[in-house]
Image 1 (tube, rainbow, N blue to C red):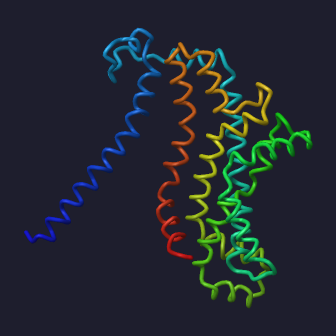
Image 2 (tube, rainbow, N blue to C red; image 1 turned 30 degrees about the vertical axis):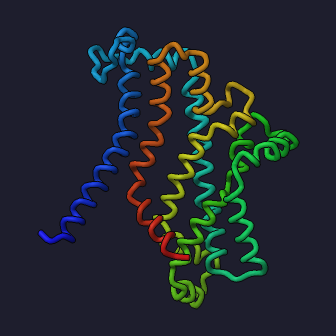
Image 3 (cartoon, one colour; image 1 turned 45 degrees about the vertical axis):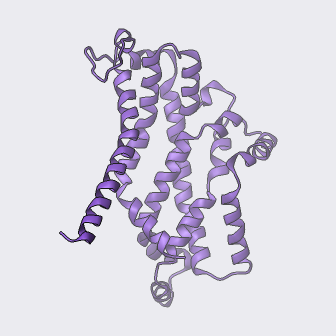
Length: 278
């Protein structure tokens, strides 16, 4: 075996070993959470701790749904995440199409402002956002959680980068056939950018589902709480019941897992394309 092949094999072994270690460091805590949620109290308190479950039980899940309106919290989070995700797919792809394929006054300056909005830390917008929401009378309402996030700057940037890879000839041919701009977007652009829209859908859903800080600021009614707020309540009120806290965390991660597994095949394709096009 030549020296070059030995170096390549050694490098592959090191890379796969590191990837395996990173993967295990992410999977083991999740498995631990899942196992703990179905353990009875006496097994949780045994030492040394173990992954083995001698008497699996769903008592923690039943107790969780009996003490807290978890179904209401899950519906709140699901409704907000789905509406925001659908709105971002539509508005971000439209704006990305305009930035990528149309020339209009101030386009480049507007795009620079958009990039600036991405760079501003999320926490900086909390106080101005809270004041605006309060003056509008939207505190503790779905408006406060949905309206400010209908079109995320990162989504526009992601769509713009991907749409730049669409050949202009397709758009010109559609114009020759008499299509309007919205028809071109609907029949030409939208079908071609499904991979990046799937990625945007995954990222937006994850961000909205797990968002804690903004709902904490604008939601003051118990009935309007989202799942992350409910989990913080679990930790402070029922922290001694470790199985119930783990059951709540398991329920909170299930929708994220389902969305990710159903759309993951598009992520690498879309991120590769957006990375190659400037």
